[in-house]
Length: 259
Image (cartoon, rainbow, N blue to C red; front, side):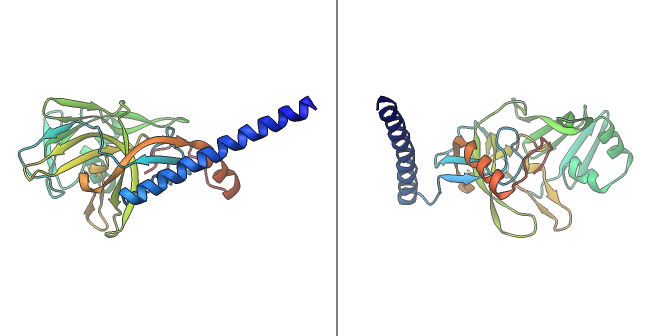
C-alpha cells in the first residue's frame, strides 16, 4: 500500500507542476495581450542562432527595451550610404558590403577577399566592420570571410561576445512583408534625428544583418529600428523543439551559417 501511495504522491506532484507551468504561461500570455501586442512565445524557424537556439525551439520573450549600449551619431543613417572598403593600401567605394558585392564579382579584390579576409574592413555611416577568416561550420575545415568586430567611434564590439538576443520585425528582400527575426543586439546607434537603430547578428551568420543586400530586388537590409523591436529573449524551452522535430520531421541544425 505504501508503494502505491508513494506513486500517487509522485503523480500528483508531477501534475501539479505541469498545471502550474500551464497556468503561468497562460497568465503571461493574457498579461501580454492586455498590455502589449507582443506575443510572449516564439518558435525558432531558422539555424541563424545555432547552436544557442535550434529550429523549432520555443522562446519566451519579454516586451522590454534591449540592454545594448547606445552610441551617438551626428549624421543620419540610410541604406543608400556608400560602403568604403579598405585593404592594404587600397580604398574602394561600393554600393554594398564587400561580402555581398563579391557574390556577384570575380575581380581581383574579391579573389583576395575570399583567399584571406584578414586585413579587410568596410565603413558604412558610423560603423566600421573588420573581417577575419572563419570555419564554414563545425565539420568543415575550410574558411570563409566573416566579421570579427564592429566599431563605432572608440567603442569596439567583438562578434565573439554573446549579448542579449532580441526579436524584431525585419523586412524580407522581395517586398515589405515583415518577419520575426531573433538575433543578438550588439549595440545601438542614435542618429541626428533621434531615432535609435540596433545592429544585430545571428550566431551562425558571418555578417551583421545591416550588411545584407539583395541585388535582384536592390533592397538593402537596415539595422533594426527601435520601434520594430518586439522584446528580448528571456528563456528557452528546448523540449518543445525536440518534440516538434521528432513528430513533425523538422530538420535539425548542423552548425552551418544559415540565415
